[in-house]
Amino acid sequence: MTNLRPQKHRPINDIHADDKGSMTILGLFIFLAVAIMGAFAIDVTNIYMSRTHLQTAADQTAHAALYNRQLMEERDAKTVALAIAEATLPENTFGQVIEAEDIEFGTFDTATRVFVAEEGQSGAVRVRTRFTEDSQNALQSHLMKLVGLDQFNIITESVYTTYKPGCLREGFVAEGIVDIQSNNAFGNGFCIHSNTHVSLNSNNTFEAGTVVSMPDLADLDLPRSGFESNEGLLAALRSTGMNIRVLSRVENMILHYEGTPLDSLPNDTEGLPSYITSSTVISTRTKKITSEEIYALDNNQGSGRVHVITCTGGSGLTIDASTTLENVIIISPCEIKFSSGSSIENARIISKSTSSDSINSPSGLRVGRDDNCAEGGGVQLITLGGMRFPADLHIYGSQLIAMGDIDFAANADGVQGASFIAGGQIDGTSNMNMSLCTTGMEDNIEIPYFRLAY
Picture 1 (cartoon, rainbow, N blue to C red):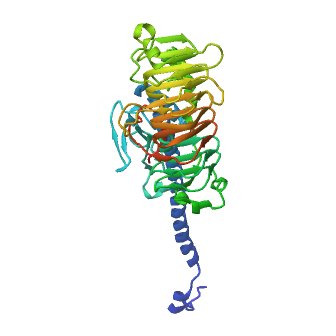
Picture 2 (cartoon, one colour):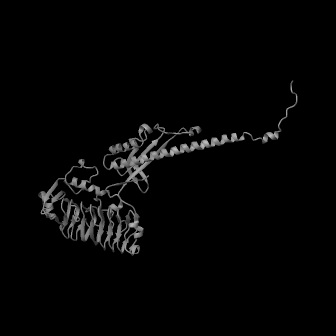
Picture 3 (cartoon, one colour):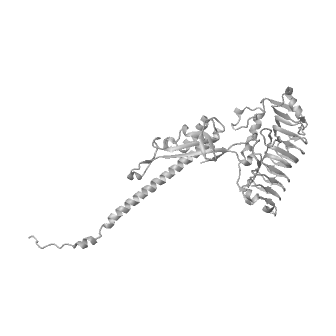
């Protein structure tokens, strides 16, 4: 039988107040929001990781390209650099992230921070790496596909440049202690660096722009008067170490000067200076020789030549350069002693002796031309041992390189443009004025260093 009784209905107000199931709808919105944020976080993290990977590859490739450009032609340097990139981002995994055209050599202006591509240059390099749609290796998105972003294009760039540390161009640089006595004046830009520590006595002055550096400033050795008696020292201090790479170049350079062809030596071997007009070596045996006698060798063809002079009698080689010795390279396996008052210009004097004073002079030795920093006239004294100049050394626009120690006492106003580099320590005495040259030292033996520009 049909029930004809009327049904009871809930009041409209009760229906509006009923919240059963509402959390399900809110949960859907929260889930969607969390999913979108999660997708964003996952894909952004992936983008940053991929960019970092690309940037690392660009930096490594740029460094390899510029380093090898110093040793080889552009095409060969690019080949080596591309091999580095392939090892970092293998093509079978990441696609074509870099091609030879993405490596450009050129110049970099440090003031404007602008790179200009130019064939034949070796001072700077720019490298680009990419994950792009055009290269068919664009980065694929994970969850952002939900909002229509299927892939991302990423391009990174790295610029490396060469530079030559100012400390190695003009200053005192040593693996061991640099020990300077009192009453010395160091001009703007002059540098004192030790990979051990610097020791100073009293009453030294350091103009603004001077650098005094060592790995740990706590090792600085000062008298009780400390900074008070060394004006400007506090502002000059820097905490840093240095790789003195030029020391590793000396032995191969000697081999080349003695006649070993460059193609059988490392590509960074130092070549002959411009004043050497013939690479044919003149060999001589003597215990004492003058400038005039050197020029007269080989039928008066001694100028512009490389001379290998072996000492006789086991007493070392004495060179009397009271007449200025110039336009020669002299190499000797013996200790080399310059007579008092000797002078040298446009020359390289090399001793293969490892004794502590393998190049020495009693007093009054002038190394380099006193020409107020004009071009030319510079000298390089080089030894596998040490150097000792106990009195009145004059040095102008020149360089001293010793695998051992350098011990010297300079004339008060006799230093203008000097680079002392020692594998041991440097000991300098008092009352010296160290003036900077910046020019006229173009024949210094230097090795380029590399740094990331951006």
